Length: 513
Image (cartoon, rainbow, N blue to C red; front, side, top):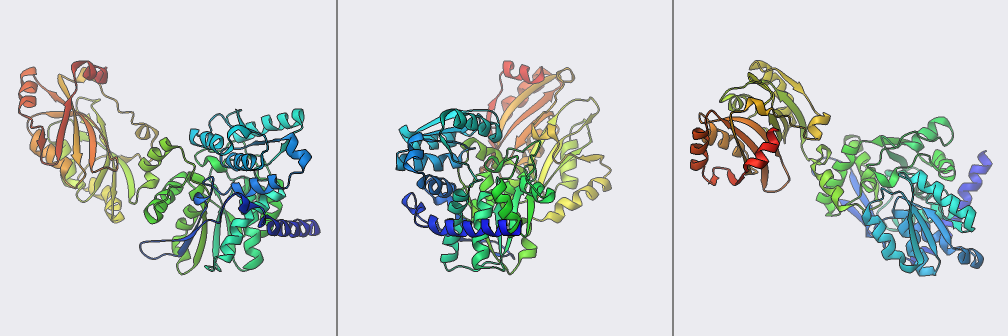
């Protein structure tokens, strides 16, 4: 076995040298940039594969593989399966070399990646959507290969593909910024991790090479534990570019020799890394592209004083996904926690709670609907620059006699399932307001506009990252006359808020059922 592994590594080394003379027909070397960090931490350098021709590193392996096709193979055309980035590399090579390519992609592939494939490949490429996962797309592509005789260009389990990916490591070695102490390499099928770690170990034998996988897609970690590639039953799709059920055979053979170990990261940690890349380098990464940085930031305190390399391996993210990531807890620069607190269902109770326990805290999310005549359970997601303020909140609630529970990560909070019983309301009115995002704006509205005049029956507010936060508020009055008088005297602008609109009766009726 040792001789076989030595032979594979020797061949990979030779093919990486040969790839130097092929890949730059299709694209140029990508930058290596230092990521600014606030506070103590390692020196982190980012290999910017988002600056490549397809905004991802996959062009290297795909173009290198297709550049060695014989005339007969090129005439038969190629077929492949991809979650998106490898497909763009094949498309780029197909158009440049004049080779026909059929590309199978999961039906859930982001539109931005499908569009990019056609942009790069033009008339030489045909996309076929098949299945709901990468593996199902592979199965369909393999059937095509068997029936048509086309050449299958694998996304990672191929020597020339691995060698092509290794050219990004060659650029790092030649950059003059090395050597590095540690490199974090994200893993899907393992082609990049194998090609890059092998090349870096060749020139810097002491470098620590760490593989990084998502918690719900750790196929290489499972393979290393089992001693051979194994198939995962389920795969998390948040990091769609690395959502592979089974590590490649060839990458596995290389990685078990070159990787020191494999770590996993959560989706929240990946979201935090995406934000760090934006704030530090003003670049946007797809989830898979930020996994290496996520692991580095996770180990930040242990890496102080070290020189760390990470690869931003792709930026082909669906625009709609950006909003979801930005609103996730992981993307926040602050620690957060969701708390539900019991208060009495009477005027002034909410203000009493805020005054007693929430000073200095930022309310990032506020959900409440009236469901009981005597008691209320508002839910707050709170954050703070000083994490001790969040840690001390439970003790404050206990000291003031509040009953509370932690709902951090609760599914009903995440989906904003806010119940409201219409039969408990007398004369409700619903207002859409904007609150200026500064401390005290919400408190001022509750204190100056609502105290002693009405009771709140509904509150739906979430920070959006803008200078203003939007809220839908329900107020309940004892009589129609009281409601009319309140609404008639409520200014359209006030301390910390702006009244946008009052919901009409039809819309209000839908809210209360």
